[in-house]
Length: 121
Length: 358
Image (cartoon, rainbow over the protein chains, first blue to last red):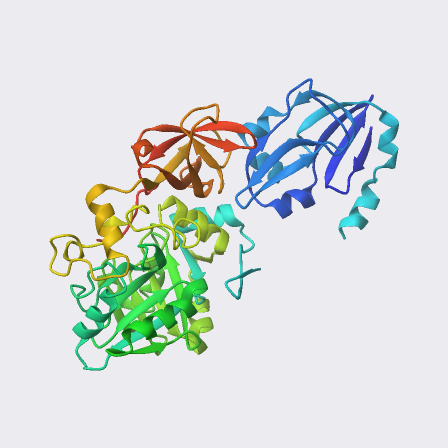
């Protein structure tokens, strides 16, 4: 399993060509307390940087981008019922969706954890 | 911090908007609202009735009937019956204390000087007075140790009190739907007072973000969003703020800018009205979302002027204007959010049960 990060503050845990995608603790903190999450449909296909989900904090609405091209295989309905989960555990129970990557090799171009830490520092 | 009406304002403190909101409803929140303008109207004759009558020329509100030590919500109208600003007016015995919105205060001052200078001295306290709002069910518990007299005050009472050796003017009022106080304090003593209030275990600092969600749940208008120069008091559902004396048949009927239009709307009804809206789903309905009578987006009947998640209500709440024939409580409308038409129900405001000490 590898973990990658995007400049739009998504994380991907990739295993066997399937990426579990969420937003980073840094992003969750910047957004503030989330009150609403809208997830994509299972089976939907996205290109890299398409709007895949919407999150709303008390303050404003923000888009969550699809970090790489692929097809949605599963969504985390626990965060629809309980958006605070994203703030509480952004990289565990607060994941958004699973994505079957169209080109798994594309992940190589994303940041690793050390690079992301430097990016937000 | 964000810029707001020429001030740097805190949106949130470390607790965050949601917890600040809930803390205010459960205990007590302290807001720095010093950006609002404080103006004293002093009657040149020495008779306060002269100042009240002069101010009634600008606002469709019974100010002559406002008793010493009492405060009332008011608004200035323009020649079209639109609202120039909303304000609080207190009878302080020898002067009227007027509190106006930050973004409007220079225009309000010019307006008052132009209309009132013959009868009143218009004295500004924009720089030398700060304003702290202490709001929530524990507000009295927080303030009373510093000023025991506040325990005797009722909603909308105003009186001068000594706090930490400094004379302050306290009103039992606020803009959150909660019991609480607004304290006008000499600016140089504001920080010491704020620190003394925050030293109480039930009191936390609250930012602009929670102030907005609290006042929205309380169904109170934000000037520039829910009311402005294009909305009349009748359209804005602020008729409760126009007492009998200023309405048709009253002792001092009309006599304010735009009175012909406002009184006609009072008699015949306005074409559109401000209403409260509660969403059925979890998606916040934010301004300027359009409102439709149907779920296909065929018949547009209004728009949202304030909206967001109501932390105490537990669902998204909003306010907006709708055509009067669709404004009945309980009516289902559809708000357009990201291309979807989400059901919302017209709901009486406030969305929460106010805890004012009447």
